Amino acid sequence: MLSAIAIAIAIAIAIAIATAIAIAIAIAIAIAIAIAIAIAIATAIAIAIAIAIAIAIAIAIAIAIAIAGDGSTCDPAFQLTIGGTPVQSAVTTRLRPCCLAS
Image 1 (cartoon, rainbow, N blue to C red):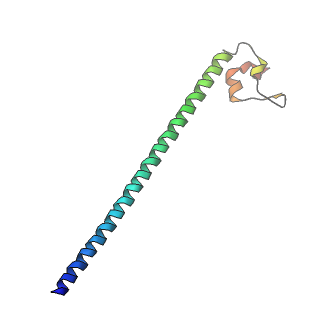
Image 2: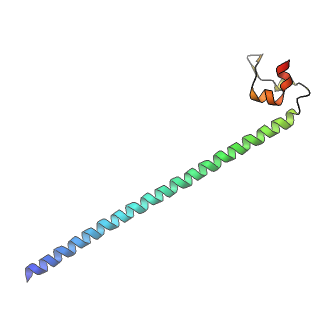
Image 3: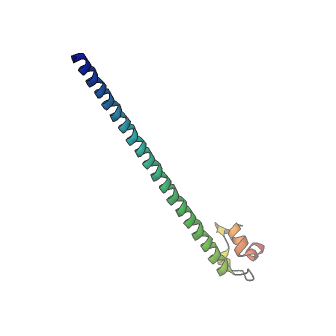
């Protein structure tokens, strides 16, 4: 009779240990999911920042083009120089094509 009680206690302890392990695994999975969600949120924020920077650059280019006009007059201030030597660039070509001709 005592051996049956001992076996029942051993089975109950084994079930308790298995339950504790299952709970620990569930907690670990929940933590992993929370980390994945945090990474997804951080990625979304980074993408939003990148889009905001791209929009700011586009606005800056649009303002520069609006200021530069149609290129009918050549303002040397808009000409890109390196060491005093005029150089071609996408910006000067778009903004002041006549500067490149001079």
